Image (cartoon, rainbow, N blue to C red; front, side, top):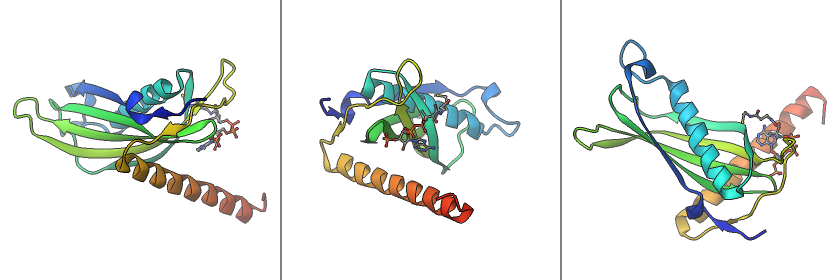
Length: 163
Ligand SMILES: CC(C)(COP(=O)(O)OP(=O)(O)OC[C@H]1O[C@@H](n2cnc3c(N)ncnc32)[C@H](O)[C@@H]1OP(=O)(O)O)[C@@H](O)C(=O)NCCC(=O)NCCS
């Protein structure tokens, strides 16, 4: 399979936050932000594989600043690294006041998406072709998160006496 650059699959999802998206204090629900991240990551992963994908894990979700009713939320998703069947997709969330244009970084998420066939069985996807130093840094950091995740799983299994 030909390596594909992240720029070919980058996805941008924009949604205007309404009253139904927030709690009584006017702060947008964290769960809604997570859902938008999942959708944006899914689009980037499908574009990378040009096939079906499932979310295997939301590895990290940080809420740096709150989002308010009336703001535009933009989720920008990029494939950070691709392995045999799985890929890490990073999502940057920004909230913008449509009246002033002022924008701030409110969340970051990392999701593992897996390419699957029609039966839902994992299937190989294209490797990632990195094009810039930023993309190479993202790939290195994604590899680190994967190693940490796998090491944690092995450690837990060892503690349970299952490995
Ligand atoms: C994700 C899923 C396909 C993995 O199936 P599996 O039988 O465990 O497959 P494998 O063990 O062969 O793993 C396939 C890949 O997924 C990765 N993976 C599996 N479970 C994972 C997890 N919990 N976290 C991160 N990666 C995971 C593996 O590392 C492997 O990656 P690689 O091929 O790039 O090395 C399966 O667990 C599934 O269908 N889960 C439900 C998905 C879902 O319903 N999502 C919500 C709606 S989209």
